[in-house]
Structures are given as C-alpha cells and as structure tokens.
Image 1 (cartoon, rainbow, N blue to C red):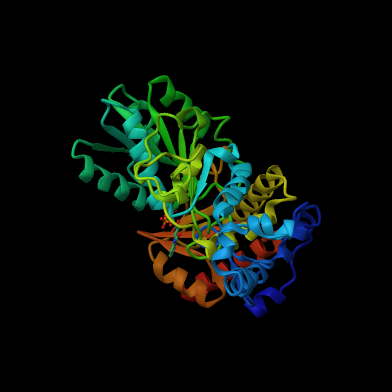
Image 2: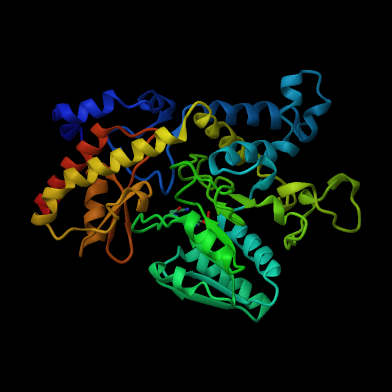
Length: 413
Ligand SMILES: Cc1ncc(COP(=O)(O)O)c(C=O)c1O
Ligand SMILES: Nc1ccccc1C(=O)C[C@H](N)C(=O)O
C-alpha cells in the first residue's frame, strides 16, 4: 500500500479534494496506517475525541462517582450535573434525531438494531389490527427477516411476505399491515424511494418500519418529511459510535399514545425509582428504552456524534455522490479487463454511500485486497463492497484504492 500511496494523484482528483467543504473533518478521525479503509458501512472509524471521553467515564464517572453518576443532577458543578447517566439515552437520542429528521422525543437509543426492529414490528403490527401480513424485500438484511420470523413464532398468525424490492409498490395490498424495508441495500447500495413508498403504504393503511442502518449519518434522512411510522438504525456504521454501539428506534409522535411497548422494561417507565407494581410508560420514545442504559458504549456514541455538530448533511450527501461517481469512473476501465459487474445503480437518487461489484471469485479477491491494505467487504454470494464515508474519505483515497484494486486483479490474472 505504501508504494501505491506514493503514486502521484492526478490533478483533477486533487481539484475535487481542494473544493471539498468537508476536507477538514478527516483530522477528527483515527484512520488505520498503510490502509485505505472502505468499510465505514460495517464499522465506522473512531472519532479522535472518543478515547478521552471513555477515559473520563471510566476514571471519574465510574471510578470515583460510581452510582452517584446515575443522578449527577445532585452535583454542584452544573456541567457535571447535566451529565447524569439516566438521561444519557435521551441526550444521545437528540443528536441522532437531528440526523434523521425526527423530533428528539421520537427517538430511543439503546439495544441493538435487531432488538429495536422487534420492538418496532411488534408495535406496528399491533396498530395494524386485523392485518397480519408483514411485507418485505426478499433480499432484506437477514436480521430484519429473522426478527420478523421470531415475532411470527410468538404471535403464531403472521405472514412474512417477501417480494423483490422492485415489486414492493405493486404488493401494497389491503391485507398488508406493515411494510418492513431497509432504505439502502447492504449488498448493492441501492437506495429505495422512502418518501414515495411511505406515501404509497400510507394510502393503503399500511404502517412503515424503515431500517436506516446504511442511511443514518451517510446522508440526511427525513423521517417526518416522509411521514414514516417507525425506523431503526445502527450506531456503529456511519454514526461511528464504535463496535456494538447502541442502536436507535424512531416512533412517530402520532403513535406514542397507541403503540404498545412490548418490551416494557423499568427504564422506559415514567418513574423507574418509584418501583411501582405496574408499568406506566415514560413520555415520548423514552418508553422504548428497556433496561439499564449501556453507559460506556452510549458515552462513546454521544461523543462520536459531536463530529456531526458543525456538518451540513447536504455537504455529506454531495461528497458521497462525488466519491461514488469518481470511484465508478475510475473503475470503468477495469470492467472490460476483469470479470467485474457494477451492481450499484448509477442514478444518484438510487444510491446510498457505497459501490459494489459482482466478481465470480469475490471472496478470494477481497481477501487479497485486504492483504494489500484496501479494506472493503465480501458479501455473499459474489459481492465486493466498498463503503464511502464522506467525513473521512478523500477523492485521493478513492484514486489510490482503485489503483490498488487494479494491481490486485492484474496480479491474479
Ligand atoms: C440493514 C441492517 N440492519 C441491521 C444490521 C445489524 O443489526 P444489529 O446491530 O442488531 O447486529 C445491519 C448490520 O449489521 C444491517 O446492515
Ligand atoms: N455488526 C457487524 C458485526 C460484525 C461484522 C459485521 C457487522 C455489520 O454490521 C455488517 C453490516 N451490517 C453489513 O451491512 O454487512
């Protein structure tokens, strides 16, 4: 990789970076040496300020303050007082809300995306009444399918109807209760039209559950603008919250009164320390926080999200599209020389923040690429996937990566 990075980047690539309004953000991340990391859609790079926060949480909040940290409001220092662990999920929810077009009271942070998918599906199905069909993309991410299957085992009367993504709109029929979709496909990077599909679903009385795993932090999401009903997403991909970071759940305000809280844990109770015998939900989406907040990982995510504080998500989207365009254009000559097929849509509205190709030996090729310092992903059955993170990638990275991909393919041929 070192030799590759020593190659001279063409002037037109440099020019793209020179005009990049986000180029200063790269310094806010720790990036691996001697490698080009194109996997922020699996695990985002670490924001530089996270270790100091974790160190403070460990040494002071946990080490010294211990249980007093749960209710730090009792402390004299106003800055410390505002850092109580009980409200940490709510503080993080407010930061996530801004990125997904939601109100802070509509977002709950905690648990995994899988668990939040279960909460959302259970609530949505209950609101759907007699309609016992969940419609989904047959190629949806496995955990979305599995969680729906698990819920079906519990209720016993559920049909999980899987259709190709292109056929979803035609299958929004009156027996469907819930539409479960992932906005950006984890393999192809194809982005669905969330606004149109939400609208079409609503017209049929169907509730929507959107998985934003590959959307949140990659571009501006407008849940309320789309009148989405429920959504979930990961904290560790484009939100850079670290391995196993807590996930989020969005529940539109109009459903707060009627949506049942199936996992009704005490931390979602209106007054946990009242220790009442019966469950009474906290106001807003906080009721969907189940058990004790994951303080260490929430703290990491909390600080990681500060990277977005001065960022305009329109710039993020513009740059993501530019990186993708550049990547695809530079890869173009390789497509006639090697058995590579682009599977990411070229139309910008249909793209997330990754570029993927089919290759008959994709698994092997990706192993070679990783060994050469180009870190992407292999996804079954034959996908080479390259994630683009506008906050820390430059067009020069993309250029170096494509030179490396060409060299690896050439060496194998
Ligand atoms: C679309 C999608 N949903 C969900 C997940 C993950 O769910 P969890 O955080 O529960 O592992 C991923 C990635 O792992 C994903 O790509
Ligand atoms: N959570 C993980 C744990 C281990 C390895 C990968 C993941 C991913 O997130 C994969 C990602 N969802 C994907 O779109 O492929």
